[in-house]
Image 1: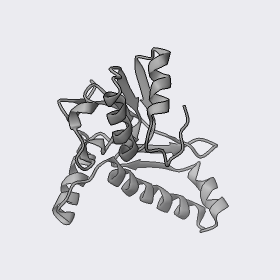
Image 2 (image 1 turned 45 degrees about the vertical axis):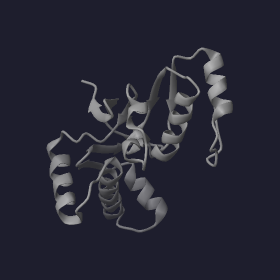
Image 3 (image 1 turned 135 degrees about the vertical axis):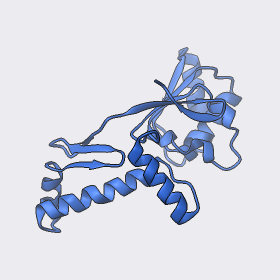
Image 4 (image 1 turned 90 degrees about the vertical axis):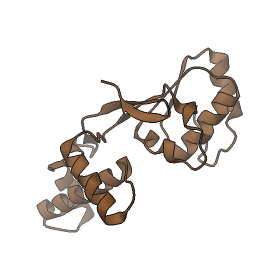
Length: 172
């Protein structure tokens, strides 16, 4: 089901899911919306599994969220904080900024350097030239290797994470 980004009450969608008999709900959104939606699903008696994408990374840090409502959820991510490069980056980030980073910070770091590589390869700031160069960019960053298809979509390795006891963990 599609819903407008301004949606605050998901009951109509929740009722449709519950009435369908679904045992799982796929929510490819960002953590603020996910927190509201999952809370409402739980309040309306849904006992199924929640599935998602990288937007789930950060859901446990939403202010005043009950972390236990996400237990048993699974989501894909390109951020694997067990990888040496990511460990070094997060340690350096914490030391410099006195705070935590997550998938969004590491991906922004890599995305910046992917763009720089494409601009260098294009030897131009022209958007078309940069986009053309992007499809030829092969960048090994802290979150893995970035390669792009002819439609400029990135192809990357993914990990599957789950939430257990109110904390992120990996599905091995």
